Figure 1 (cartoon, rainbow, N blue to C red):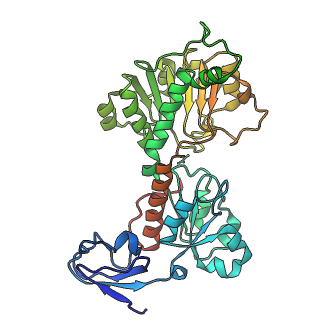
Figure 2 (cartoon, protein in one colour):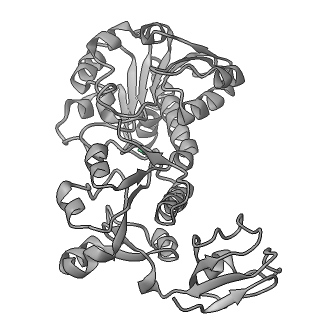
Figure 3 (cartoon, rainbow, N blue to C red):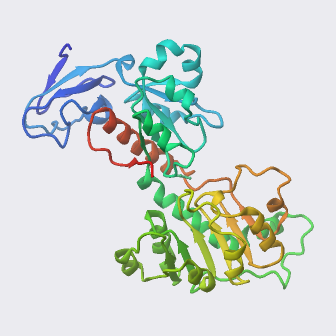
Length: 389
Ligand SMILES: O=CC(=O)O
């Protein structure tokens, strides 16, 4: 391998260059671990102030073609990667779209070492895994990996990573937004306000207050905790249930009460929020029985995955006022067929799985996924690896 450049303290490298750090003598591992960081100059090296290394860093310049191949579904469009994220990925990878891969499978299949996915598509199936002999990592942009067959993927010696940090705030925000919107009948209110035929306010048209109400969080993980932090500012009484692990530190920090039995939480809460991963154990964890335990004035909010709820039971509960309302960011399937009974109810709000659909979250998810994938390719500790159960 030809050495292209050596940089030391104060070195500036031309903008736009790409490279790979081959060797870092001395103590500067925080900056460029040996053999590790692939960089493009804009982000790592070009600085106006001296580069903070105390000894020589040897780099090899790399062309885009030499960067590890990353398969993405497409650029732009409904399921493709947005242009700004493409630019981010291109700093570290040679991007190959599914179309390019399918058009030239023989050559491309050897090149691809990573696949970048979200819960949209492509589904990484056995056929795709079989055709990618050098695949090392599937970088999921998002926290939920229920769309991936982890066992099968791991049988191919391929790692899966996710982005739990990047999604936490935006997903907690959508939980709060749904709770407030449902409580204060925001969607109906908006329709009344913009309808040309409305009588402006009807006396029987009242919402309920979130302030000082009881919120039951099912799943106090990273997102659930962020929801609890927000709920605290509304003076809510916070209950939570975790199937596996009581979270005493978080409990104390937000003044939450642990319910060992989910039934207790369901019976006491004004708002029940689902913040759990979809696994075989949590599939349809809220069904007829659980809905029947909730207060008739309570609202069910789902920011996890649609299949956590038995939707037929939910339709029945909402039609018969077993519970007051539901607010769902997730359903199954997504989108729901246009004639689905949930879409005919007026005590429901449904959003199209937008928990992480913010400019900031999308960028952070891509950055977290890139860090994960590079760690796998460079043989470094992987920040967020997901293991088959
Ligand atoms: O649904 C969003 C995610 O899994 O991050």
